Image (tube, rainbow, N blue to C red):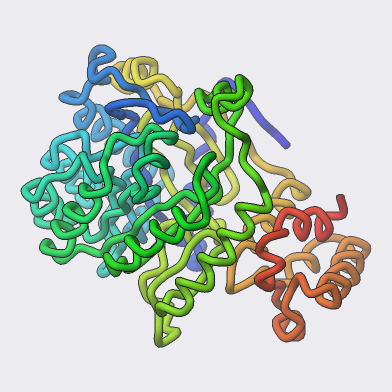
Length: 418
């Protein structure tokens, strides 16, 4: 791994930008990280901050202008490469809670991105939101300003589970916010978390009941991961809550697949389902698929990561440090890396075995014959053990079975030779 902590992005990017733009197979997306939250949830280890004002360019009121300035800086790097950027394949505002900013600020960032890069017809344009960060007016303003999808952090519909997670909304807010999203004719995705300490199987079933009753276009369901350094991790160490139980999470995952499949949802990534009764692939998150398919994206905002044709870089994490660099006309990037062949193969395996479309076995042929033969032998063994689909393997694809989805880390390790 070739990694540098002091960024040389302004010097490096033109060549990589040219490679990305000239590759017709690659798509180009935009990610905007809005780092603000009302409170910090006990399980969260994302790059988020509670204070609404952390100095010039790093407040709720001034953030949009800073993000736009970074967009303009990115556009100059395309000019230096002598290439025109591809129209944006997708746009995603994440956080944090982007909808803590005024809707007009979010739409202003989106509008400037369209002016600078263009947005392809039918592109997916999403913002994350919490149920209590939306109003009927703000949702309509987002729709009027070009957004066509809201990904709402529901997590659970059960009060005591939300309390352990330290979510600020109550279950009634979820239903109300969903009604506003539908009234504005926006697509709706719901994020859920299962396996919270104290959550019973009946609690999880109740959350699935609520989610399915809202008829989302897309649903993500993640097993809770207790990250070191979080408040929840400290509470578990002190015995305030029991630790998560892998068997409990596996049971809840199986229930999720059963319930969602029966309701017309199809899994396309281990933790993601799209409403797709006709098997047409509609409602899948095009932005997340761009990540999983190793496409290109530019990350705007504090701590945002970017990727162009194999070059990766990341911005200063703290909003004040990020804003200071942008306002001083300095690249906010503070480090970069160019993964070597081994790292790239491992990543392709990790991502590919999570997808219903599968990992193309041809990726192993790009490496040495020994690697390709070892992977072929291991894949055949995984098929006999019921972890990957034999019929897919016959087509040159490695696709996990339902049991394999529960053991995707083991599949990755074995295919990678660990």
